[in-house]
Image (cartoon, rainbow, N blue to C red; front, side):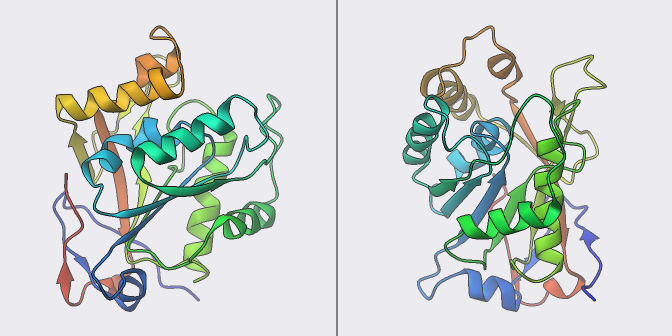
Amino acid sequence: MAAPLKPVNDQRSMVGKSEETQQGSDRNGKHYGLIVVAHPDDETLWTGGYLLMHPEWSWYIACLTRSSDPDRAPKFRQVLRRYGAAGEMADMDDGPEQTPLPKDLLKSTILSLLMRTSFDLILTHGAHGEYTRHRRHEETGEAVLSLWLEGRITTSSLWRFAYHDRQKTILPQAEAHADRIFTLPEPIWQEKYAVITGLYGFDPLSWEARTTPRREAFLCFSFPNAISNSTTLPNG
């Protein structure tokens, strides 16, 4: 049985260099980060600033929907190039009915998109999906968590996006109780906003453009045995 998750409550906490992390980093000290999202644009809305602030990492973005979308798929490829990231898309159902997807199918789809299974850091959707309500966000985050607990993907640190919209009464914003909250420098936020409005092409009055958070927030988890030889993940 997998060890229980332990929240990392200190926004500047040290994350140990466990066996998983050693497998994630290569011999030249390159660090590998994985971002798993439901839709093209989620990687930018919820963690685009962090990506932009850490180009020294080798990022891989797995997106579970819209690979056959003639508009969104090519835009996602452009966004990957902008971030200097690798990535792949799947084409899971994303219809308006939001019919629940089998968890095993979600997990196998995620694994099919990956070129490696060991990472220094994994980021994905939160339990409540950032806003009210998108089932695919919730399902994606839970599938990633399940794969981690089963040992089918490894990392010493998993961060889940931490946002809320007060039951649709406000645009999504950072959770005040999040473990890590980064206020983006203005040039970084402007670049993130340009990805949303320029590369993805959302109108400045669209929900996406108006939402684009200036503060990025994460709930951070590690295994209890992850803290050994201290190494620090970038804090912004």
